[in-house]
Image 1 (tube, rainbow, N blue to C red):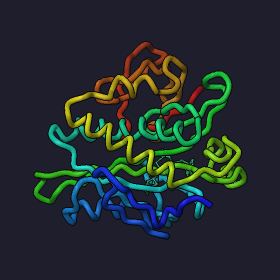
Image 2 (cartoon, rainbow, N blue to C red; image 1 turned 90 degrees about the vertical axis):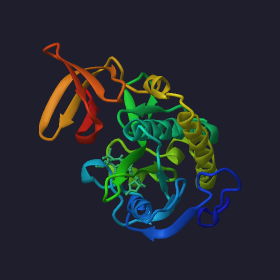
Image 3 (cartoon, rainbow, N blue to C red; image 1 turned 180 degrees about the horizontal axis):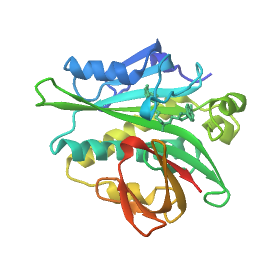
Length: 267
Ligand code: BT5
């Protein structure tokens, strides 16, 4: 058996030096948002084995049986311009998930706009599974003068195939792909190391947008974007400078769709 997630401590760096582990919690994002409101410094990481109300975007549920997922939330206090840096911080977490998964499992993954990590088998688009999802939430002080960003990451590490099928038709896990169990501690360590380095670079003025755009799945492909009850079909042309999805509709109109309220499917 590998090292235990419950006793993991980061030996160096600033991200995750303060780490709160819960065997069971409502949602790690809620705990990190509460810490933001309580004035806790940037770099706090909240980790849980089980969440009772783990959530995705649009109040969807995030399912992760005990011992199977890496569930964590990171508290950032991005510099001004806040909205710009908050958006970029979410992008670098996606890039860092790719790096960590490749380092620990040897798997080359893609990012599914806006916030998923997927693995594509065979020809791009012919088959894919969702390995992880991210939920970014912003806390603003009552006076409106300070803000914090919480990025929640849920990675399916050791989820058995039978459970995956119960969660969703497209759910996949690292262990199911590599055929052996994967160390959550090794993945967490690689993830925190990479996010920290990328965030430092971001705060020093670097823009990760082009690197993030390069990793997006399904560019140029026909997609169906679901906005509430409405379906918008078209070609995924790319993303704009704010990370909005650029969709060329069948009527040749170019729409910029923000991540908040839409879901993306391949046609
Ligand atoms: C996401 O939402 O993918 C963001 C998930 C973020 C979860 C983390 S866990 C730590 C932190 N604390 C929280 O409370 N949340 C964050 P979305 O794109 O809305 O996808 C949700 C949809 O994915 C659900 O409606 C299901 O169809 C599917 N789903 C649920 N659990 C899944 C899983 N383990 N693997 C793959 N798909 C899943």
